[in-house]
Image (cartoon, rainbow, N blue to C red):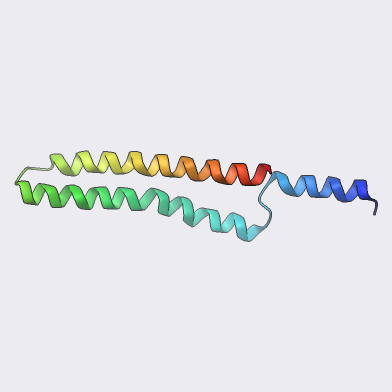
Length: 87
């Protein structure tokens, strides 16, 4: 094999995930970056509703904030992974 063939293989390898294990490690990272803010937002909203004696207004507000936070967190994670794979 010549240098040119090795360079082409390396370029193809850089296009995607470098290993199958790296791809599988990405799945729980995204799942946790979505689930944790939503869960914590719902928990905090429920706690605030119980303390303030309101219906479920804080629960809904904090749940929406948790969903937004999870979306932003996942977006940043995708940005990091994309930059890493493009190098």
